[in-house]
Image (cartoon, rainbow, N blue to C red; front, side, top):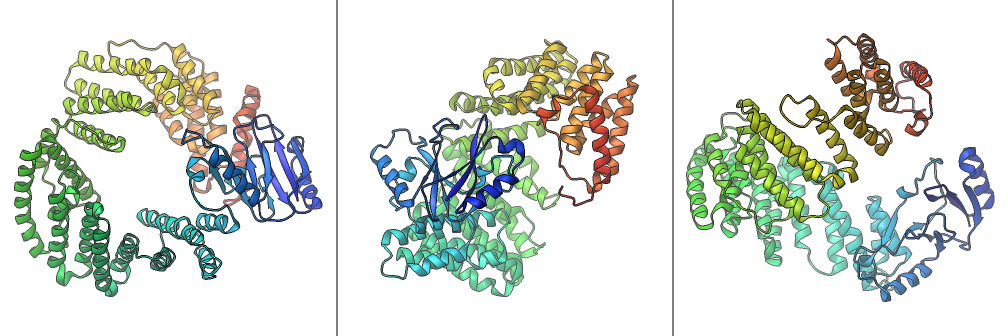
Length: 639
């Protein structure tokens, strides 16, 4: 067996694996000369497929031992050794390995595409798994990654052999079918699972049950739920029978896992809700059942149940069904009374949950384009009560949700107190979690919103104070800002805003703006168009049109039409100025973009590294030639 390894200054990768030396040498000749300089072809001790490539990521990439080739048995021994020598750090990475079962030749030969091969990081969680490293085990992972149900079914047939161990059956059930089932579930939630995929769900569940020798009511419930949703859309005549199976499965799921009560009632309620439009003759009955299910969850745990689901049911007009609308009006009064009782017993936590549910309801009704239904006054009353809510023991995700609620409410109502509440939540996250970065930007954005409200109310000093506080937020966290490319970009944008701000604040010098823009350009290796736009503006402020055109040209070479918005903004900003050269340049650029945008696709030829080695004149000549190439190339030319 032969391998071709490429080792460059900063990385190393295996570009090819094949059984014959002639194949390896033939592939080697296809590599560009510059890549061949870094390539070596050598024989490995492995004679047949399958085997593994072990990548020792803790070593230097140019070490002779960085890549190791091993049989599956040797890999199993290695893992057994580390199980005995396990590190305390749960995130410690011992090595990663690639399962190789056929010849491999990297198509794109100039860059490291080995990262796109299927690999396994060996950490403590892998060491703690009981499964043997075998072809069977690796094929399970391969078939799941490839969404290959037929491949898993082939392994399932093998388990009917008496020689298959219980551990192998468990491996196939959990790492195979179970993993694939939940992948399909998430695909369904994002609208990507096809009708054919949904038809595979129940057979997958049945195979899990056979392999594990027990009913899997959770899987059955979700499978029937997805099948019911599809039936309501495409095969309404089958929906009622599926509804009965769905409800029955969830009843058994609740018995087996009572801790899932909230989610189970929510999903059963949703199932009944789908049936309202699927079977209009019984719409009222389905609506009543949907309301009943969600109220069971609310009565069980009002602080965590889905109030949003209940509000949707009692406010959304279902096909203008008069029977339902009459019941909705009654239910609204009942629910309001129930909410007030819960708030009296439990305080502001209920007020916040209700206010959040009303905000979700408003977004839902807007999405459905339903007007004149949302109870604006009632919703805002609960939002004001929610200001007293002090989050305790919330997850990070829930804290973000809470901050987003107060931010949206404050921006919509022009209320500074809601926005100050938002800042306190982001500050809590920033002070609690070491990996917090973007919260700095979020706080700055809220302070800018507060400044906008103060300016709107002719309160200049308060607005200036908010902007000063925003700048201090960046400056007091400058180490974090500079360590995060995205955040540093936001910092540059804020400094530009401060430079043009009409108020009594400390403004950055042009040299400071220029330094940050150049820093971002280098840090991102030309990935962002923003620094070039900023450098263009700075050059014009320095009355240097030649430099402004040069910076704009660099962005055009790197980003082409992807930077269209930047160039439209620049044109709007300077179209009435006295900078005639840049006006002509920007106008010509926009005309070019409009000319080619119909069939345009992004496929630049010049890298940032090469661009920086070219003279100013060469850049101008290159861009003019590149424009002609874009104009003349075929619509679907992949070059």
